Amino acid sequence: MQKTILERIERVSEDVVSLVLRGDDGPLAPWEPGAHIDLELPNWLTRQYSLCGDPGDLSAYRIAVRHDPLSRGGSEYVHLFLQPGRTLPVSLPRNHFPLVPAPAYLFVAGGIGITPIIPMLRAAVAAGAAVTLAYAGRPFAAELAAEYGERVRLGRPDLAALAREFPNAEVYCCGPASMVDAAEAAFPAVHTERFEPTRRTFGPDTPFEVACARSGGTIQVPADETLLDALNHAGRPVPSACREGVCGSCEVVVLAGEPEHRDDIGAAAGRMYPCVSRALSPRLVLDV
Image (cartoon, rainbow, N blue to C red; front, side, top):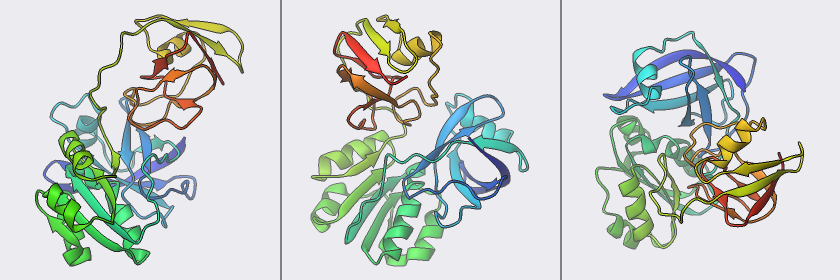
């Protein structure tokens, strides 16, 4: 974890505030557009937020937090109780939404989904690419329109029309689940990031066995327990945050066996996220 000091809180819309987290021990870890961090709050909750500042400035991170009316304690605490000067541990940045090199980009964002797109937009413009942002939301809208002018289109986007207008652009989308679903249907290929897990149906949970290659021993994972909980209860703690398969903090290495991937990240070969994923084979061998 990295130690930061909350330097300032700025309101950017009716329900969104921006936080500037200054590194307390010197420069913070480097990051690239699309990355996010885990933020440990004083009320013992850990939440994930996309970095929306300047990757070239490692003296501080910038994130934005929307006040969710159905908050489980994270956004509510940030909006109602968090004060500048507070020490806040943050994780090293992780990036499951990287910006690939391309001559042209179309960015589609809704609401707080603009946060990972902001540094992508700036990097693409700086690289000389043809760039268009279609944004339905209020946070940072005026700031982006003033900075990028005609490159920014505000209001609810017509995704089918955009697909016809930009057939060769690299498409990135982040926003509400309904927008992301619509973008995946409208474009032949689209890079997406979700803040909430996709609702999908899997077969019934069944028990399986896990061999711990590094620490030794075997763990039985019952049908009514997650692999993450089974590892933690057996004394093989695995760091975790979202527990929904969207943040990637609990990644483990699979040495043998066939995982059943239930995450929304798209686990790389030989990796899995035990907060949601299980096993298709009777036995997994993990590097834990």
